[in-house]
Length: 302
Image 1 (cartoon, rainbow, N blue to C red):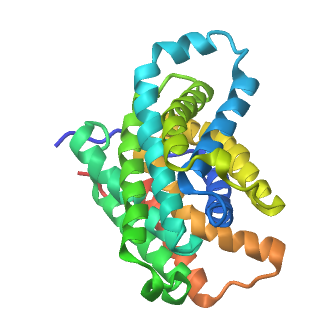
Image 2 (cartoon, helix red, strand yellow; image 1 turned 120 degrees about the horizontal axis):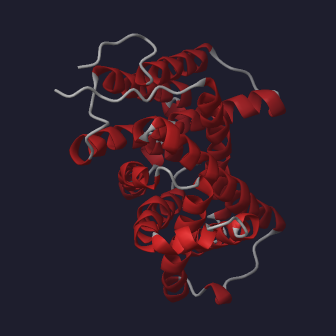
């Protein structure tokens, strides 16, 4: 069996991964607030279009920016579909019925799907014992951290949970597909995919939701939508594609394992919340999972 390329992450990349976990940890919170007042497709359109505008304004003057963007428009259209339009819509649809905690843990199956997709469709990121053990440890840690009571499993409709799992599967495909943008500035990739997903969502939202007929959301909902678009999308995707370019698809997708722990840590730092023994054990298992996937536990590769 061919050897898997060494894609271990350095300290700077780990820092970016943790930062992205904090940012995307807030996205489920913001989404849960917004989706109670704004239909899913309209919310997705607002999220991707505002984020795309922000990135065009920020990076559009870079030399060769639009030349690169237009030369890869077909690939960016596919990426926008599987990394934005489909998963964002499914997550928001699910969050109309389930809480952010359950949505985040279901979304945390993304690394498993990324491993399976990479096994079938790539040659440089095959399944190894380290990756399997890392994903398993991470998911067990997530279950311990969130806890059955917080998930509200008995009150959640099956279709809502399956919608979020569908989003995780879509992200798994996007993680492998996104590797073809290696060597391209993460700024170009992020801007291109968000522009493409805007073009995809525009007719869908107008046909399904007729957003011009909707009431103006409350101020707190507007604030959540702005944070969702500018922080958890525009800025977050620049960071994500940077990680993807240096660490590979499976490692980049592990950010989903950091999302619920990030929410707990933010609560401790800013809301005076405490960490229980079970939650601490969950965080420890997630840390072991990340170390295993990066092969820092010395697990033999085959």
